[in-house]
Length: 409
Ligand SMILES: [Zn+2]
Image 1 (tube, rainbow, N blue to C red):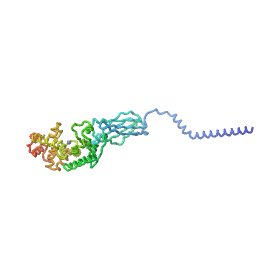
Image 2: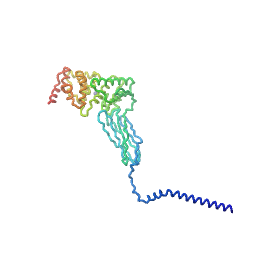
Image 3: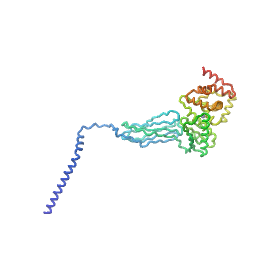
Image 4: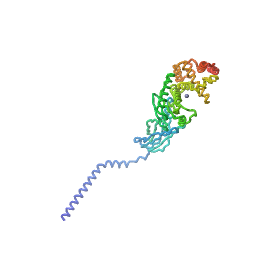
């Protein structure tokens, strides 16, 4: 019985303690009651109508990856993966082709994508429709917008339209970067030396200097050059993309001397373009081509023969006809080039390189070349025709003289 009574006492005590702790527990619960009450009050308030209005204060946009791939010469592709706290509703790609002299134009592209908080998009640029040379540089950025109006603009990135089908070796000297993949280091160095010699000669004869870096891509031969061009002319051995500061030439290792001449020729076009660029006027073709051939170091034998034949038959073109495009017929084109060389040589050798420099400077300022010639040499283009023909032992060109009268009237 005593054991039973002790047991009961313990039972009562334990029960009392449990009740006590429960009471304490309730007390502790009471401490949080205000919060619970507040919640309850809130629940009693009329509920705001449900809305999809995003909260701009919590908005973020992350670019997970942004890159580009080049498939030379066919296309290049821009890729973007982005995420946001809110639905991404707009994506823009803006790109600018880097050009030496022409004012840059920014193009905006809106690539297709499925709206959402995580988006992947890409835009493929079919470069076959453009005259984009190897080494062209494209600056681009993405602008991502979500439905709060929040925008993310990526840092501007530069993509180089490299022809990675070849393993290029590279040499850089002064303002020239030369890239080639066939031929050894000596081959590359000889071509670089030719480029530097041509620049020195140009500076001496015309005062013209490279204002920005020129990049020269030497392809293994003419066929491989043509594979890199979208619409190559059959006769194209070398090209100067003057707006890009890029030259492309196909030079096989057994045509080194031709290659050196061609580098000099194309570099001259690049320098003259940089030096005289003016959106309102062009340098007449005979000055541009004449200087390029003068920089080569002399007239090619076949073209010299063309000139001799025309001198003998008195079938030279009037100088005024050589200001624009040259004839497409190869024989006639050959004569047009030969005459251009002869005219530029005549001006530099008889009147000095300072006057040629001054002439280029006036052309840069946008003067017509008749006016520029008159100011520097005191004859216009028909007067030049007359002086030049006389120097070759010919009578003045009747067409040139009559056109001068027409011109002055
Ligand atoms: Zn040329």
